Image: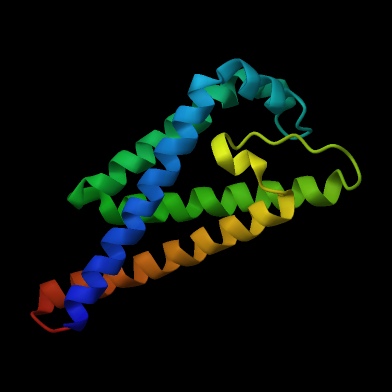
Length: 150
C-alpha cells in the first residue's frame, strides 16, 4: 500500500512540474516579444535578453519531456528542482537588489500576476515538491531493485 502511494505521489509531482513548465514555456513563447522586453529590464541578463527569451522556455520544455519519459524521470526531477532553485535565487536577487523599484516579471501566464513575495513562496513549494519527488523516486527504485517495500 505504501509503495503504491509513493509511486502515485512521485508521478503526481512529476506531472505538476510538466504542467508548470509547459504552461510557462508556452506563455513565454506566445508572447516572445514582451518576454524579451521584460528580460531587457533585468540587471542580470539584460545584455542577453534575446538569447534567454528562447533558452528559458526551451529548457522548460526539455525538462517536461525528461519528466514524461520513464527512463529520464529522475534526471528530469533533478533538472526541475535545479531550475526552480535558480529561478528562486534570481527572484531573491531581484527583490533584494531592486527594492522599491518596479520589478520586471518574466514568468508568464497567470503566475505573472503573483507578487514577488508570493512568487518566492510558490517556487519554494515547488522546490519542496521536487525534493519529495526525488526521495520518492529513490525509494521506489530501491524497492524495485531489491524487491523490498519502500
